[in-house]
Length: 157
Image (cartoon, rainbow, N blue to C red; front, side):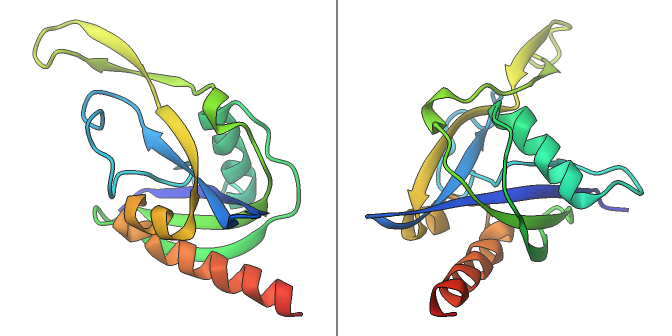
């Protein structure tokens, strides 16, 4: 059964228009990848866990910042590998240049027997919507579309 993750799509409105916070995965496999490699901050849920609680916890673990404020459900998407992602929009503003991510261990170099620690997220950045669409994982692209519809709906109403 595919894993299920929950995450937050943090957004802000500025003179540059709507912007979204995305994170870049850490570790050696992602080091040179940019377009189509970024993600919303998210992490795996255990059976029975509240998705909003998980999304907030994972945001904190990947950015070092506690997300504050109300969330709006953006629904579920499936990534290429089958993973389900439940996402929630939250308005906020963090310093993307100074995130502090948790780490994971990986045998590196491969088959060396040695382990190295890598940050789960090696960087974060605010992107305008056009840039975010080119950088986010293809399976998460519908979340950006849903975010724009949600924000536009709130501005109109």
